[in-house]
Each structure stands twice: as structure tokens, then as C-alpha cells.
Image 1 (spheres, rainbow, N blue to C red):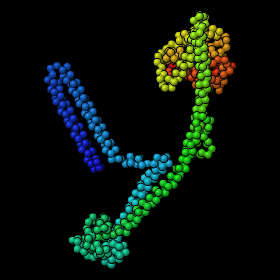
Image 2: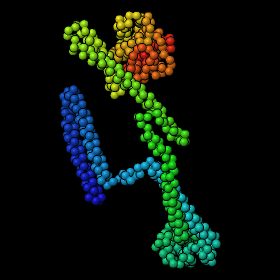
Image 3: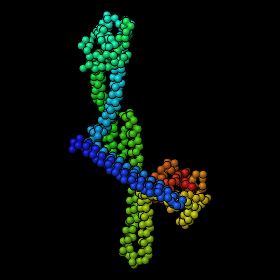
Image 4: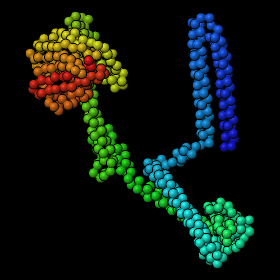
Length: 541
């Protein structure tokens, strides 16, 4: 179908939709009126006050339901109308869509097109103002010429010679006529003498078109020898219109030339400005996982892109650091997993050969296999917890909890596991937290403290309620750590000090931090090398 047929079909469907909506609305309105009349009759003839109130409440409900039904039907009608209009617009093609489809895909082209659109709007507004001002000036000068000539003739007592000279000088048609329209004298513009209207809009100039020529006419009421006469002056606007037409053509030509020059220069300038982006893009493509040490140069970039390049280089620094630590972790984890797997495989081989003959060998093999399997299970559980945290699958079940019983229970287990270390619990507090997550955090922190505290060392768990939060501290007098290590201690796969004999993967403290944040809390560390370390947990009261 062509455009006319599409528009006709759209009007027909729109009319049908409107008819259906009005039909449904009329039916609902009629049903509501019938029900309203019935309820009013019941209210009026009710024998008891309770029945009248019941009818009144029912009437209110009916009115509310009626309004909701009308609103729903109107919403459906407007939605269908909008869909119909959208379909027509898609079939015809809207101007915005046409411009979008034909717009350049490059950033330089889009920016240049944007500049041109802004310049075009500015040029059109400026042209309209300039042309309007020119027309106003020309029109005002023509009116002043007519009124001044009339005043001069009036002052010269309407003399013929004066009128003749003024008509030739100003290129005017000057006619003096009686009240009944008979002419006394007439000079100038003889070719339109018969067509000039007389005695219209006395005292105010007005425009009159004779064939293709525009005239400005001014009629002045005067007195000649005691009687009323009319002085009719006509000025041809041919020269003025020609001047105005020339101005319009020059303005359009200048705008067109300015647009062409602006597009050419703007496109080149924009491409030069955006060239660093292309260079950066090619440099980014050259950076691969095989060599993350490459960085983008900022020496030759003097624009705002320098900040972008610096941010990109900082991001690469973080990615490289994380990648190297993760690579190291995978290597360490592979090595650590290979060892228990080798142990399990070896003891399984022993069991298959001699386990049934020697109970001591059987027990040794089973204990070793169980120990190694438990270590592997802990490692896998920590990795799975980190994965779930990254996916947002970890949810804390918060409730009001007394922290003292939880700490006593955990410390009792650690006193049994580390009898050569002293564990102290002080204070009492409650917090809004997840009981299971608090247990795991305490286990991680106490296990970490036990690793780095020598025998006969002291580990303290203290509880306190401050103004805005509940604070739980785990302190030790172990080897401590430097400020550089403390700044990275909560990063995944980070192992600050490899000089001690304890083994780990750098996952415990990051998991503790994730657990604290899941409960809306915070964890921080204070440590002095050779003195000890204190982990501080802040939870909601």
C-alpha cells in the first residue's frame, strides 16, 4: 500500500477503536445508572438505619468500581491507539528514523553532523532575525516617506507644482480628490492611476497589490479653501522588495557556503582530534594475556585522553597484579592438591596390597586418606564460597545475637587444638548478625592468630558495644606484619610473608571480609612488626 492508503487504513482503525471504546463506556455507564437508581430506591425506602447505611456503602462501592472500569477501558484504548500509531510510523518511516538510518557510523562523522545541526539552527534563527529586521526598516522608511510627503503638501497648501515636484522626486503617485471621489489633480505612476483605491484607512498607511506589484498607500484628510478633500499618496515597493530579495538570496548562499566549509573543516579537525583514540585502540589490541606488562604512552597525548590512558594503565596494573597472584595461586593450589592426591593414591595402593593382612597398615592408610581429604575439602569449600560471593548468591540471615556464648564455644575448641597457647575472652555484647557467619569469621581469625603466635603466646578476643556499632577484636602477640603487608592482607591469593613454615592459599582473610560485608559490617587490621596483630570487626547493634 502507498502512503495515502496506509493513512486511510490508520484513520479507519482509529475510528473503529474509538467507536468500540465509546460503546463499552456507554454500556458500563448504563449499568451503573441502573444500579445507582436501584440502590438509591433501597436507601430511600429502608425501614432501618442500618439498611440505609448498607445501601449507601454499596452505592459508593459501585461508583468506585464504575470509575475503575472506565479508567481501565480508557487505558486499553489509549494503548491500542499508541500501538496503531507506532505501526503506522514504522511503515511510513519517521523523519528521526530516516536521519538515524542515514547517519554516519563513525564518531567523527557523528560529531561533525552534530556541529552542523547546531550551526544550522543558529544560522536559521540569525537569518530570520536579520530578514525580519530588514523588512521592518524598509517598511518603516516607506511609511515615513508617505507621511512626510503628505505633511509637506499640507504645509504648502496642496499646490500643484509642489505636488508634481514631490511625486517626481520620491517616485510617488499623488492624487488630490474631492469628497465624492472626483479628482482635482494627479501626478506620477500614471500606469496604475486607475487602479488606486481612494479614501480607505484614512491616516494610516496600508499595503495594496496591483497585479505583481506591491504598493504602499496613505490617505490623508485635508482642507482646501474651506472644504474637505482627500490627499492619496501611493509608493511602489518594487525597489525595496528587490533589495530584500537580494538580501535573502545572499543570506541563503552564505549559509550554504558556511555549512559546506564547516563540514569540510569540522570533519578534518574532528578526525585529527580523535586520531589518538584510534592509536590507543590499536595499542590496546596489541596488549594480550601473554604480555600484560605493556603500557600505553602518554607523552604525546595533550588532551583529556591522557586521563583515560592513565586510568587504563592503572587498570592494567591491577589486572596484571591479580592475574599474577591468581596464576601463582593456581600453581600453589595445583602443587598442594597434587600432594594429597599422591598420598591418597599411595595409601590406596597400600590398602589394595597389604591392608587386609595388617590392621595397623589399614588404620594408618585410612587416617592419612581422611586427613588429606579433609584438607582438600576445606580448600574447595573456600573457593566455592568466593565464587558464590562474586555471583551474589551469599545471603546473611540477620538476627539479634549474643556474641559471648558464640565466642566461648569457639575458644573452647581452640584451647583443645592449641593447648600450648593462652586464649582470653573479655567483655560482653549483642549484635545484629548471622550466627553461622560469625562462627566462621572467628575460626578464620583465631586460626590465623594461632599460626603466627609462638608457643606460650597469648590470643585475646574482646567484645564491646560502642555508640554506633558492636566491636569484636581478635588480638595476638605474635610476629605481626609490616604496613605494606597489612595494606594487602584482605586481597585474594595474597600471602604476605612466606618465611614461616605455615602453608596457606591467601583465602582466609578475604573470605572473612566477604562475610563481614554480607552482614553490613566492616573488618580492619592494626599490626606492628614483632609486636602483634589486632583484627577489628564492627557490626550493627
